[in-house]
Length: 174
Image 1: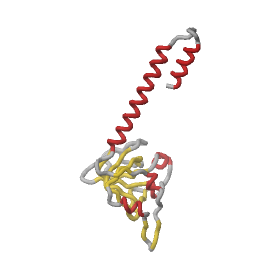
Image 2: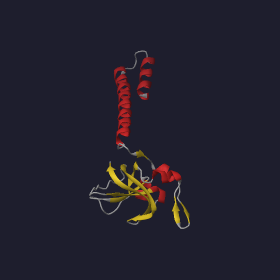
Image 3: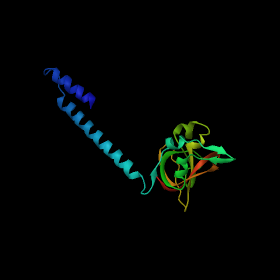
Image 4: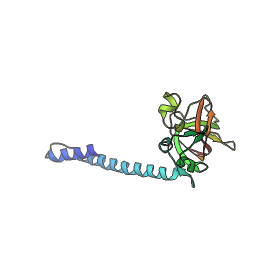
């Protein structure tokens, strides 16, 4: 839109020496339309991706609260304890494993730097997702996925080589 507006301004200043007014107007109009359409589409997708009755959570919120240890037990912040047992929806990346199809359990991580280029992510940057009732998914390499299910804050548990303190009993996958 900006380039089209600059082109229209240059055409007007040229006193008839330059042409292309129709093309510049078309560019500005098409850019404005696409801006509005894309914004509307993303707003609609954001609103409709959340399953009914689920709370939208993100890894940034979870990462703020490091667990503590007292008397040999893991102590969670009150904000994390409030989420325990609640249906949540969170987006992240699937940590790669050897299995590509029919996955019923995987680790969801905060970003692609952790899932594909890093070593062991922080405990608060991972969630073990376990699907029940025969639900399976296929691995999605470096693609943001959304997972819904009942959130559990446990004592550290393992999935493959990774250890995490959060688990989701998965019911939704996008």
